[in-house]
Length: 279
Length: 280
Image 1 (cartoon, chains in turn brown, yellow):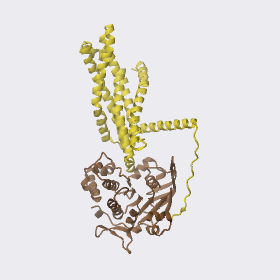
Image 2 (tube, rainbow over the protein chains, first blue to last red):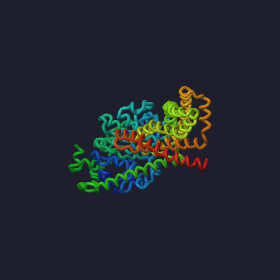
Image 3 (cartoon, one colour):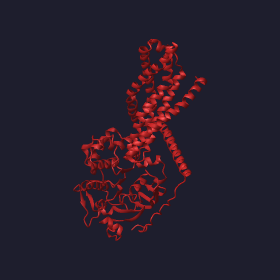
């Protein structure tokens, strides 16, 4: 299993510099400006939960962070490199250090599940003898080892998202962006996806931006952690707040950061708009 | 809490100004110039990508199989009957002057210089430009192209260059086969319809050809291949409007590449005839 090969990394590195930094980022399209000065930062090994209504710009934030879209103004730094000013050639190199899970998975439909997951390794010219075990390992991690030779069209929606997660993390990137990974899924499958994200955070210390409309996704990440002793996901007790320490919320509203804070601060907020998320 | 204020000002309502006709025409011109610029950049990059790594030769081979081998049946079939119909049409005119032996000359020149490259280009454009546009368009709307970029792959290298390279190589080969099969069709028609000897037909068909004729046909097929591949890729990678947009892009790819092939054919013929006098 993957967990055995890596150390436990749960404590956020509060002293270290931000690995993702947005400074007054603006972007607009024909219909008007969507992001109007978004600023935030994420520390290493932290999970930043981006909450917001449909059209609030959550996906845009993720795409700008990966350099898939260029902001009209403002700066974006990822892993110490200024994404907003990099050339496409430079961005291609940076993106190899970042995982991206698209909302619908965006799997290559003409490739098998195994080929999809191996895609990145083949692009990096990893030896063919090494690729097969690594693909099998990561597919076992998402509990889809048996789907290796299936086509994406033969999988359910939840399975496709899990394969997308496997594809995003196969080369063990330090940062992963999740674009609404639970959107349109039933509660049980959503829970499976969130558990996977949680395990990646706790086992590999992945820094993550998680765009979602579901508040419970964020609180699941804040209130649970992966217990290495029992090898199961466990709820935080009052004394140990392992998940809470590495989870922060960012609420986007009308193109701006409306709220930024810990899960406890979000729960304590009296703002009527935020209360609507909590209901 | 965030430093930004909780109260967010409402976006200003846009003024309902009606643009004048001139403004609409200027905007349309700008959009079309921008499209030409984007197409030119993509076409240029598709070639320059081949000079530097990474190169996706496996993908290029797969495309050669799809574009080249896949197009072979329609090229063979249409080539045979075009050669035959050429003989029937020209032969009936030559019979009036008792010069049916000239049929081989005419059919050979027409096929090598003009009909072979043009018809093959148009047939492959109909089959492959549409296929390329719909495949890339579907990948675009399902975010597969973005996923590729997000994983550090340049789509112009992975998707465009292999298709362009494959078409540049296979279309001249397909044209050569089409011309040969066209001559076979012409020979069959001349033997059975005009009672002309097969040897006479072949001798005249080969004797009339000069090096400049072969170069004309060959260079046309290369240009036509480049046009149909780049137009297909450009239309596919610029799909707007979901699956409906994919359908539109597919149609556009066939229409634009076919028209461009015919337009380019005129200029290439003029250039080739000029060079034939000066160079060859």
